[in-house]
Length: 336
Image 1 (cartoon, rainbow, N blue to C red):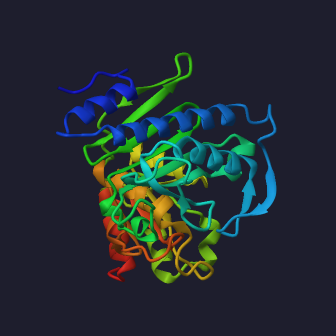
Image 2 (image 1 turned 45 degrees about the vertical axis):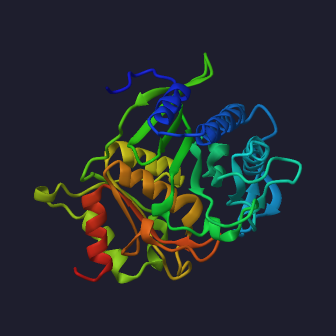
């Protein structure tokens, strides 16, 4: 029986737990801590401009990017909400160079890892554009109580959960555990995420293409032909597509997930390996997209099949409606 609109996220998680024989509750507990972290970050984002959370810290992160104050706040919030729970063996953050071990003063031997981008698109917060937190959970595979690099270098298809929280005109949490994709909207009057988008399915073909065309001078011929394809009028195939690019991955992805479309961030002459991070951005969004009926590729290899070799590995990303992604794959293979 489908859940009713307005069901709380906490109730939804408990109902999912009851379907799994012998479930310990650790995974449910971990998700509930992520929910709390999201609420804390939402509160800070919602006060941006009123308190001192705007602007840069003056530091540069492991990605070579200037750290925003909200990046630092969100990263610390995620860490402090997770480190003491006993659910995790280690964490990994887009903002931190190495894996983050659980301090010895807290329970060790957690069964899961958590990788996260604490605040995707944070450079846009000064201009009130939607931003978000992206997270990915794997089961621990290494021996011993501490986490190891190998626990994180698992392909995206082995994720047991992926999700994001988007802070925009409303705050939403969208996640999957492989049993469909569900969206919950935060009702700030009661402080609860309520089911608003059950069993999300993305259209098989969209009408939107999202790419930073300011980088077109760096693209190779395959990408140029691909983008021109989406821009060329053809009534039978529903073209031209509308160009929509926010520059905040989680916001572009969320719109295309609901409405249908294709997001593209190819490798180019400057970023030959691609720009987006596999573990913190591409893989978790790829699992969500697949569970909603979409697809994703890095160049022309499925994102969920990519074997990570580095904690901060970068990849090209083409993600969205399945038919549109397959068209991208064909162009990238040189079939057009």
